[in-house]
Figure 1 (cartoon, rainbow, N blue to C red):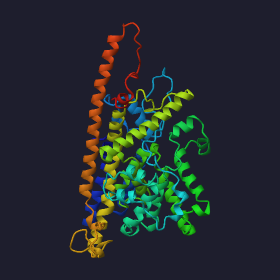
Figure 2 (cartoon, rainbow, N blue to C red):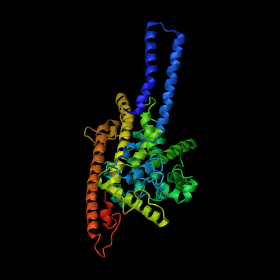
Figure 3 (cartoon, rainbow, N blue to C red):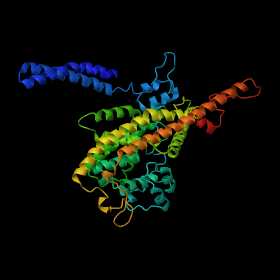
Figure 4 (tube, rainbow, N blue to C red):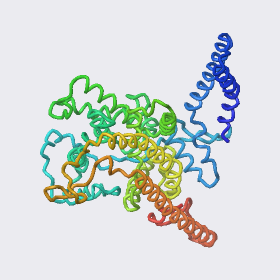
Length: 483
């Protein structure tokens, strides 16, 4: 049993016993008012102490990566997880004789890799004309593993513009989710998702900090890129023709901006564990989930979601991201800086990094996300069934499933159609399958390294044979898949 739980139980046993005795005395009608007051005050003081202790514990992220101390996880992967998903520069205690090493806050998923300045034409989006290739690609948009790369190619690298427009028109988001979110909150979520990587530099926050870039200086080394994404997007909207929020009232504009800032800043991966702790704790509270924090979790989960997609998409995202890391490593080498974790293209263990990413980041995040979704959706479904109010699309459906009265196909987007159990099971299966694929690649990589070491020993004394370190003499394609 967790030590915290044991300690808290010991603290609470006596006040619990006293309160139960008081209940029995109240039932008998022989309670002394002075004794009642003393016992209630005592119980309140103990509960307050436990509350303070628990609050401090929740704010402490020291133990979040304790499971990663295992020797089965390579040190580079441990360092990467620690430097990326906590606000610390490293997770392992260094020996006094060791020199401090450079650490990087690696932004794991750049969901905006292909995002360009869609805002140049955003004010023309009403009545947006779809190219034929885009229409064909969007037929699969209902599928979990929808290929956004295909949409990007079909749209001439304008995938974000078409996707945002499609979200509002195809799914009628405003009407579908107004049970729990207001129209403004829905707009804020989609807008935050659209801009959350705007003008990304392809390098990490810590790279900016170490190189003392202008944005690092501007934002005082705090969530450097995330602050820039929001600021740059809003700066662009200072131009009248670029202001897609021009019709909002002053109050709505301010409320939406506050939500967008909170959500985008929450995509700073160094705050990952604190964010997870906050949501996990709120699930246990009677007042329920905080909307802004839950919306931030949804955006954060989307930002790291590629391991929950089909292997084809997941692998493509991974390779694109690794190349981005390697390009940063090339810059670090040019500047005489030590390599950040996973940024050395000659020695990075791609397969192990993804296994660690899935085990310690993705799986716990999506588990929490589905738990939160259940707490939100189930009451809405129950309420919807009691009121028997037709949900969106119900008035258009006939007895033929998915077929409208005019004979066209219309997917069922009603609350009653939500199958949380199947969705959760599908996520678990996909993530597990991808992890198994990485394990297979890791095993292949281990064999290649053993083969290289054997060849190295055989050629060690051979005249005229150049030797290499860190298995850099392997082909680049081989090295990229090394475990």
